[in-house]
Length: 468
Image (cartoon, helix red, strand yellow):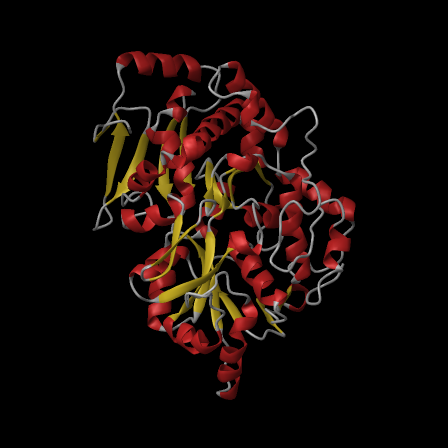
């Protein structure tokens, strides 16, 4: 199904393959002379044809790997090198300083940088890489302490998802010993941070405030649990070492904890909030302005990759899991990756359940950059103090429009329709689309409805957190 790979020195499509001793081996896609000539002709209008794109070793980097291996980048005359990054901060810095042309990026990273939280830089996205894809996992020690109080069905199976109020006996036990539960997420501006906080706060458990005006960026002010940062691939090992008691992360790192007998996932982000933008393809604003045609072509290739991943009821997902299991992509066991990718999720050894929308790459208009998704992220930054002062509803929308670029997406979609690679039915109706989802279309675990048009009214509904 995928193009044959040869380790040669001359090719449009390319990637770097890390070896055990840190040596880099150049890998490439072998093309026929006809394909090379076709790609060269297509690339004539692109400002830049040789590109380096970054990613973190997570399942949802898949659209990048698919676009390379299926030749979608090549169809646009783009010769792409994919390079794994050590962590989200390194990835962000390298996009900002131009070492990377673009990257698989946390949605909140682009928004926070544009606002000037942590790092000040203008970033943009015209493509959402996926929806959902995360889960919260607790250690075996915490799981064992929960057993007596967990809700079970008639067959004795635990009823998932768990609400965070099930943690209360563990919090009490820790408090008696003068301790607090230690939980990890991947980055302060990640969906994982906001999802973990949302889940806890929905049960009345305070996850802590950020107080940048006071020089406190720990996010642990007034916290009943302590939330800190751990890079995704290090999560299972950190849990095993006992440094943390649980974490929120993307796949395959929850399923790896199950496979290794280290912990148990208790809730997915699809349970916390459904169908919210997860990762984006991020570029700097200056790069986008300098390379508009190149950017458009990248978005076209990535849209096709997302469609390929979801088409015909996910028929390509098993092949995608095999592809990204390779060490130069995600580098995890194919069977572990295949769990969430093929629509199942294992909560504990042998407890496998259907999860058809755990990973969504195209359906539900997943790839479209909705302003309302950006506004939700900004609302959570304000809720927990990363945005230190109240903002108007107009500010939220204006900021979302600085980062999310649906016009570029729409142009890419129209070209794909014209080229008969996709159809109008594959996309939102651009004649009426506003970029703001209807209120309440994304269910939340606490039943509170989100409307991107009125973020301040939304914030006032919460018992915990800043209310404006």
